Length: 105
Image (cartoon, rainbow, N blue to C red; front, side, top):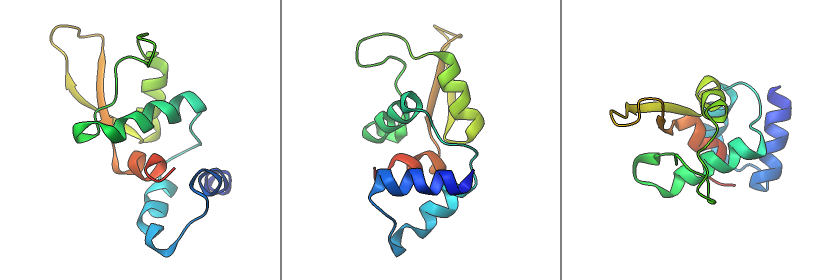
């Protein structure tokens, strides 16, 4: 799986440089390769303060909780805090591994 992940990231990033060694190590610790939906969701966290991940897609539709859970399970995102108004919503932010995965794509 790591070979597939390295190939995917090399394609996305246009190749690795020596300055990317810490990103490579962080990415190697996670499992699997994100789907296009997961990758797009994680990428949106780069532009938000603290790496906060959006609750809604660009069309205003709520992000599928399965997408969020899979990213948490893979180590690319983590729960940030519980939302007291909407306890069923998962408020998350990027992890270092998530940043390494999508940061230079």
